[in-house]
Image 1 (tube, rainbow, N blue to C red):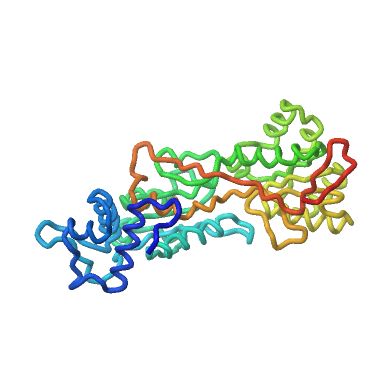
Image 2: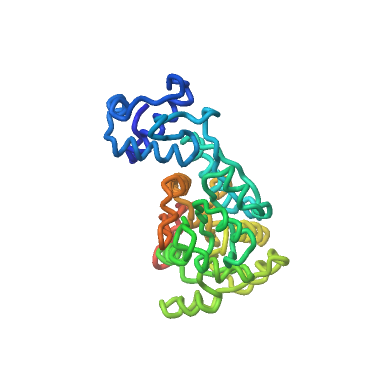
Length: 358
């Protein structure tokens, strides 16, 4: 077994030991002495003990001065990771991708897991008996919800997959995610860097929008005005979820933008359809930018601010396994976002005469 690029030595040793356990290489379920095991693996005692501690926390092994280190009777992890989701609203929801990345990290590290809905978090004692940690998703969480009380009372390390820029639970719960406010601004800056000035910015009308992005329609328009984008500042608008396509059509006809920047990829798909129905060509007539994950399945491909780092799943799992989440104050691991330069956005020269598809 080879050391992965960027992998810590203790994580590599953990994988090696898990592989030996799964393959039944531990005679009578007993481990060699520490000096012998260090010699076999070619590592120091500090590195070995770190890996063994993680295995013990996950219930894979038991350790005592009298019996030494042994595999648990089941021969595998007796406790699992609990992944709690709040329901995914549409196929563009980034939480779907985050969930898949956490599952991939668990499989890669031989960690068993269960997935359930927040609705079922009722018994903290039963959760503590079955699981070694909790990962949970959700938006507009205020900290006084019943499921938050259950998570706290379970006493298990927990990680929140951060959804909102503004929230109160990260004062007490570790979290992983991007700086949403910075990411939102980066999408507009990308369009403006290409020479666009008549940029229409679409917000979804909801109580969640200001929490998610850190901006209201008014405060974002004010920022644009201060930054010198006076034309774009007058083109920030809200749409209702219930009348999404009709609202978008009305605004597109009224504003006649050169580019549209959307609150989410879900909204961007609706804008895409409306533009097509109006006979607009993308990106020749109007460029389109989403906010979430983007899509390579559309024609042209949907450009977007990608909010998920490739390291997301591994980072969440390591926080739980190493119990870093129990630190005070709890950490917020800020992961990088990227711009997916899809075909729905064109490069524009400064005089606006030349369109070159990216």
